[in-house]
Length: 113
Image (cartoon, rainbow, N blue to C red; front, side, top):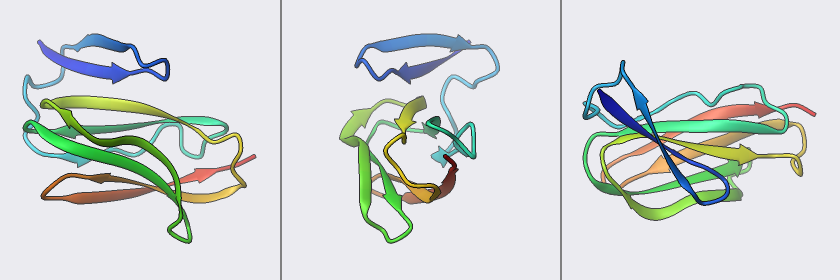
């Protein structure tokens, strides 16, 4: 059985078991947020294949930083999910970017009021 780690907005880590997940992911991957489009919250999920520092940021279509969900934090291999709350945002397209020392991955999401 593999393990998935979910970080909640209150800062408490929750550990859940996902029987379909490999014990160690085979690559770094940034998944499509869900739901997408969203209002007002969505989940941003990614997996990493080795211990590394990662940064996860949300930007607007002009490239301005809206939120930094994690800032250069050290994570072990696994699947991570971060909630993003956008009730103060205008309707539009936003981007979320996962950065590590060796890779940068970006996906887009749509916020609709």
